[in-house]
Image (tube, rainbow, N blue to C red; front, side, top):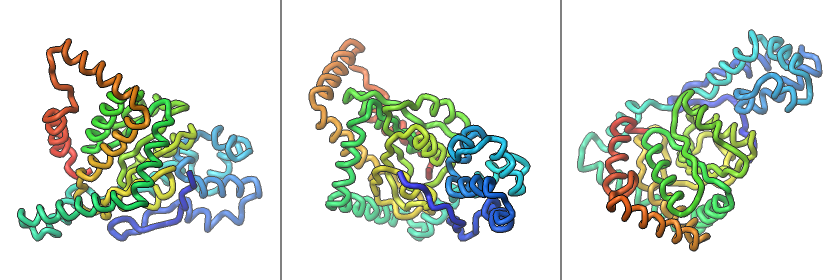
Length: 322
């Protein structure tokens, strides 16, 4: 995975993101000693990783001492490493709010319900047509091969995408794959990230949006050297080139309502491809599932049929636009 090119950029509303580190570097870097300049250069080139590293970890990565790291941070005008990390978090910033996304979508359909059909059908039609292109087919195949080699497949999704992640996790389990779902927000995600381990591969349902949780997951994946498959729509520069395989799902705007239908179809293509790679295991697991259902009286599981649609409906009500 390649590094993000960290340069000041405009957000979705056209405002420049605060870049305190960049400002301090422009004003003070020439006055730093070579040892401190080395630290400053690393911090600038590895902003995402630096947000999640201790002074000792930074020192090991740079090839210096943790005391030198702290001195460099302070020489740049920060009170300490926590202050620097707050500045980096502000640099990454937030995305367009759900209310703003809905207003822009309603404006696009002229606030007429019948136009919603055209918008949704058009968007999904384009996504499904793109799915047939040689490039996208090749990417889906590459993603399936990469995930198929993993000891465990970790699926990441937020908001309504969390239910898609859960659905993908259920299908993976049915096909005999060990799975782990990352669907929490804020500090609760930290507990889930503790479960990551060598041999995992990560399937991220991000659509190219740089939520802070997405950035932290990518940083942890890089630290553990885990391969990443990312479903993308409109690519955010802060996520660009961070995945081993990127799959476009046709969401070409981040400022309107996120439509999940194309993602659902692409996910099923990947799940079926994984089953084809190891047909014997997939069939064996489904036979076992059928036996268990019979024992339980044939009750539907959480992510089948109407149960899954009900779960998605509940998610859309709570997180309508994520």
